[in-house]
Image (cartoon, rainbow, N blue to C red; front, side, top):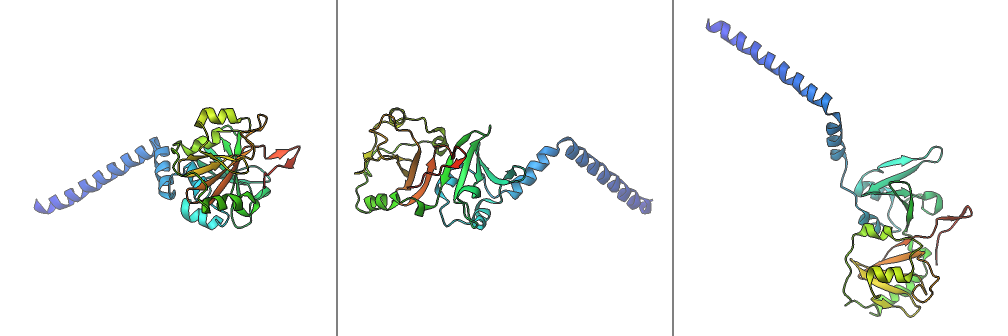
Amino acid sequence: MKKMIKPMLAFSLIIMGVIVLVKINKIWALNPEQNLNETSVLKSKKNLNVEYFINNIDSDTTYEDLEREIGPFTGSIGSGIVRDYYKAEDLFFLDNWLIGSSAKGPGIFEVEDMSGKYKGLVMYIEKYFKSTEYIKKLFAEKKIISDANKIEIKPRQFFDLNDEYTYEDIENLYGQPHGITDNNRIYYHINSYYVFFPVDFSSNQESKLNYIDLYSEDGKFKCRIQYAPRFINNSSNLLYD
């Protein structure tokens, strides 16, 4: 009798194992998206946010740097000419190698919302902007007001602005400027950035918000966000100094 118990116990364990495997397969079949998402999370290095594309990329950043820090591109769009993109929050940052990026890294990202609407260009190649020398000199000479009440916003809100904004709109949004440079560029201390507006933006009522320049609190150029159209009459419209 004792000799028969062991084979019967082993057989019972095998049957129970088969039942468990069948149940697991049913759960997988009923909920494949959950399993796919779990796999995607394992492959993703971090959740992307908009601030990364403002603060963590510069003209020396390579595609290898990006893949190491935030993983491969989220996806690609287009037929014939394919463009890679990263998705951050509800925005798409499209690699714009066609109009300014280098072969080694993304000098420019074109930004679109979920509906494909153009939201601006994020431009990193500092040498294209002669105004950076002047602004850096102001920081070095401590002529930038640093004791202003800092404005706190979500970085995503920079892409709610557009080239239809006037000085009055900006003043209604942020209040009085925190300072103005000798060449008539107003600026605000927003989050950890100093945000500079175009020359004469505050004095010319017809002036539109073509771009803003963002600098770190210690005076390092971070990027230019261009709101003006990227093309005019089928010609490139990159606003360099």
